[in-house]
Image 1 (cartoon, helix red, strand yellow):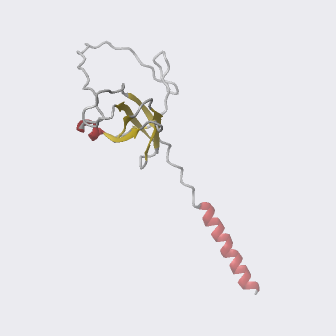
Image 2 (image 1 turned 90 degrees about the horizontal axis):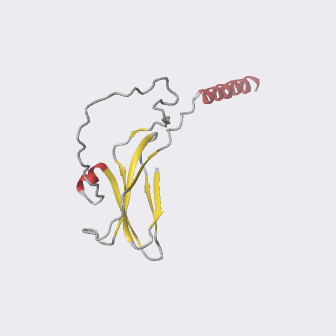
Image 3 (image 1 turned 120 degrees about the vertical axis):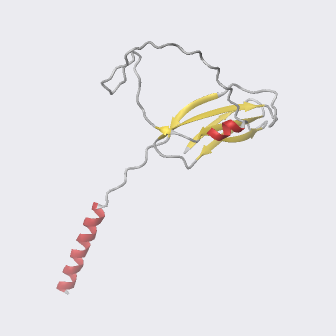
Length: 154
């Protein structure tokens, strides 16, 4: 489960989205000198011809293209209740999810005002390690031995 929460300072529509295609969560810190911590490999600088950067398509959480990539939800904040919270459940355990949020003025089709997009990444907890069944097997075997002994001495 991922929870995204916050508040606005005026009434607004708050849109938040969590990616539908997560990546496998890895928590590896990168050192500032180009080496990866916990690993023996180092990054070697290479020179390649620089390609002209294509301008990124502006992300709009109300567009159909964005809704294909993100699970987008909307919440309306009002005067007196400016806090918002989104709970995304049913997510894969141990994966990293990208998220986006923005607030707009109270017009669902063409808002006059829009905040800057806030984005980040978060990981869900790893799945729990299954408990071995060996302890249940031994306790059942011990109970069976006690039952046989009870029947024998009765």
